[in-house]
Image 1 (cartoon, rainbow, N blue to C red):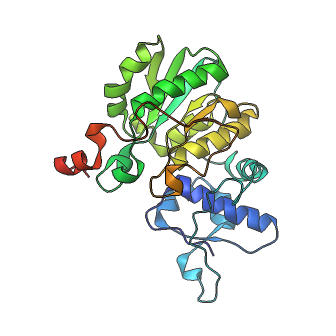
Image 2: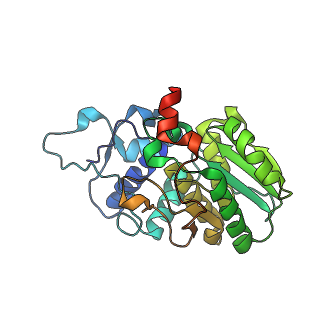
Image 3: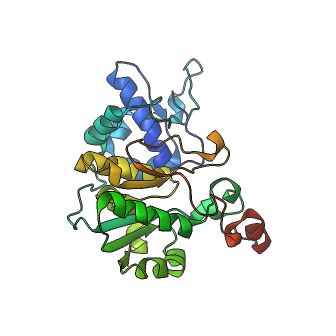
Length: 272
């Protein structure tokens, strides 16, 4: 029995469902206990609801329990596990996942902000995004060719417009933004359907890339990700990354947050 933490969400759930899926494929009885945060996703993923998730009331005193996040690439899963799970469970579901037909010069950028930049979590997850994007764009162009347009997907579109518009426009890139009312399902579909991706330190982002790689099959190098993930784990380095992705290991100024995003500044403003 895999027990999810109370506060996790879709990207984290996918790792747990993957673990149960691969165990069941091997003939073992492994399931994930229900978390109410799963409900909007389970409505679109009937196979997950029926095969991989059980009510909390089904958790027995005698069940072997796992509290692990099961996110470590090469230890908790291998590429074929991810591909099988995506094909068998996610594609063809209510998530509406399909390849985007925009040209090779189109790049989708996912910016995770939200609670990562609150006083509670900024010390763990916040970093200075614009300098990273400078490096990531250069790496994307080096591996994928010229970029002509950028589509920004984020949980804080207003911040992106205020802080990133000039960066993209200065490079002659046509910039569009995911509609705020698309919701998490629409945001995930936008990531999953993109051939070229620039991601930040989010499991939601990583899973968008896993689906994209399964759909396109030849674009792993065109996924650009930061090595940084969480300062409390593995000295800050992301252990979830596909080594075939293009990993940005260093950025000017390091992985410290921008002054306005530093924990002390956020606490002083009363942000939450």
